Length: 211
Length: 285
Image: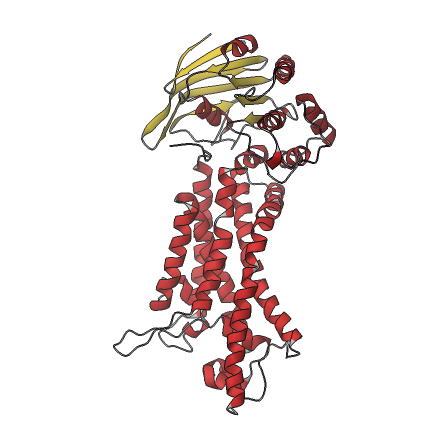
């Protein structure tokens, strides 16, 4: 899989939030996105997932332009900002709704990914009563369930305990080895350096360097 | 490409989410309907007391009473204007029930559901379907409440007007055939409400649901004062029918306008939604 971002610019209410972004992401790598608050990290993630449309430029996945050839990447999982789920549903039921919309991910896989991030698949507690950490775990589970080709994670280790952070890191490295493109934004410099094969630095909506 | 299965999946999600969320609110329509029924009963009771009428109304009498609206308003020094409050309450309430859920889902869970379903148009069309179904539900609640009342009171559950009642209220209605009555009392109000709802849905995404809701209410109030094809509220009042008021609304033209508006706004909505940004509630932009 190859993801190409070409001259991508996004202007919202006269503010340039993404400015001439050019990037190529390929499978089998974890890309770390670094930048201050408001630098455009989340906006870039939205652009890649197709949640926002460009003012100029494009995002293409294997040659298919988002917004022209396809509405969204055909195999994507994302955790962007605060996880937003159905308040009255349990973790399992929430993921079942999304799995059904995405074309059917076996229940066994959902169960397995919930256990993997440290949530009990049998738990009937509704999402509305989850702790911050549980919400974050469910957000990660939703993003990686079904092992999509493209995984976008915005601050995935926020509110997680050390033990869970290790499990998530292990999971991401495993997915990377299965040839997925993983884009992670994280304020923890050390964790981001450890995880990432490539660091992308974004500042005021522009890519300032990538190594 | 829009996928029927995907629309079905989104729609089933909307029924589950929006339906259960809005269902308790819609029960207030039962109260509005009962108030109209009691008002109609009071009027019929007076007719009975004065010997103009011998019996209470049928199902159709109450339905016609509910959806009558008001005669064409003519501005003059002597004219007294009474706002048809129950008519307005019903339509404003329908706009309230259908107007907020789609946008609220869009800024919350919709972001997730659209990403996993991977189809913008299906997501939006499912929301429109949900709105249409909600409109139908609101009308069914009114019909059901009237039918329930009629059954409880052992009155006639028939599609026939009581001549003595309408001789005093609006005798022109007695010349209508069954088909005419179905058109002006059922089809036209339902179709017009659907047209208003589709427009409301598009405006909600263009501006905000609150602005859209306020515009619908403003249009309804203007409809009461001004009889014109421009103000769709007129179509939902059979007292504004051109056979009752010559300067009124022709049902055929109204049905055509409703249908054209639904198609136009569906197209505008699809085009708009293909480009809309999912920014979420947290964005200050």
